[in-house]
Amino acid sequence: MRSLPVTNHPTSRPMFESFSDGYVVEDLLVFGGPVGGHTSMGFWIEVPDLQSASNAVCNQFQEVLSTGLCQLPEGWSMDVRFSQDRGYSARLAEYQSLTAKCHNPTARLLRNANFIRHWQHLESGALRRKRVTLHVSCPLYGSAKPFWRPSLAEGHYNTLLAQARSALRNWAEALNHPLRTIGGHLLPMDRADHARVWSDAFNPSFSERLDYDPAAAFDTRSSLLENCWHSELRGRGSEGFLLDDWPHGTLCLKRPPAATHARILLPLTHLPFGDFTITVRLRRLPKEQVLKRYESSLGRLHQQLRHHPNERQSVGLEQLTEKVRRVSTNEAVPFEFAFVIVVRAKPPAALAARLSALKNAVLGMNGAQYYAAALPASARNHFASSLPGLMRQSRGIFTLYGENRYLADLLPICSSFTGHPGCPESLASGTDGNVVNVVTFL
Image 1 (cartoon, one colour):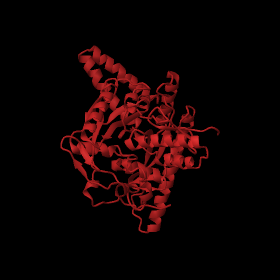
Image 2 (cartoon, helix red, strand yellow):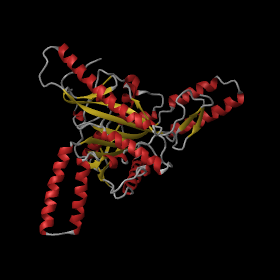
Image 3 (cartoon, helix red, strand yellow):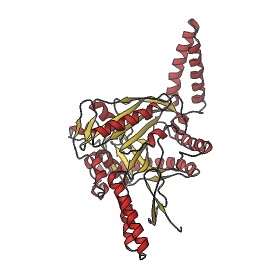
Image 4 (cartoon, rainbow, N blue to C red):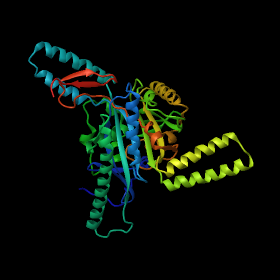
């Protein structure tokens, strides 16, 4: 195993200062040194389409996610990131190579026509697929004493990473078992997957280069930002910022929905365009810390009701008492979370139209309210908080409180059905602008 420096990686570039930098070590993302650092493990989540599922199936899916959140240890964090990519070029090229070997002229003609149609949709941006990544992070509890021998430092760091990897895999396996009961599963991400996800976040123009794979040029000896950040980040006055010459805009959830249900995010995840991400970053709170805060609020309410009886405050007292009961009996697990949307589009007019559609979708979520970051500094902080695998929240992000059952409905888990993962025998159009592989025999 290749080890990292035991000190935080200093960088001389000013544009890196607002972003946490890290490394890819095998299948882990590592940020910082052993003291105060953390490591993350990434997974792809694939689940059935629940848009037209029954209420019983949706409730079962919510129960699976709620159970997974309950199993997250205190101090750990998790982020779920929804995006849409155009990673079909290799799939279509394999399909075309099989077409060239076809001996039936009618079948070859139909397959060529099918390939041309899908490739035209890919070039125009109409061919895309919904994908969800999950990163779970845990802190690295290293020794504060310096190591005077490099061999000791390397061995200590490797031990910490091995312990973190084992703990993260155990949590993922505990979530994967109930997820399979509803037809979903977790697929671990490797070095190439991390390189593609981070490169796509900083380089929107890569989506126009259909034959380019950023994982091929990724150097594990360099940091994530050194590998993935290749352009200037410039402000656009009161309209966000430019990155890779693409205008970017951001939204942050300022007030959560008053009530949630299993399909509350469908207006967001089923918009008729791509090039936007939804990131929900959450961290489990210590139970004693939450109960102490609730007890202080209960004491103030009791004093106010003793001097000035009020029906509204009486209702608030009952609700707060019920929250204390749920948290005390472990019926509910407390979390703090942030909900960030990052959208980008090449023409500024298209960006404004997409931001408007996203704002309307958020306002339709049972009383939810958004905060649109107009200043470049605020938009940059929102963008930094949406990067996968980070454990710390960026400045300027609204941090909200939620419990496990409430948060299970706000996780943007919605993936496109791609059919059989093997050789592309027959490609058909899906319902999400995606391609489905249909095979005759298994």
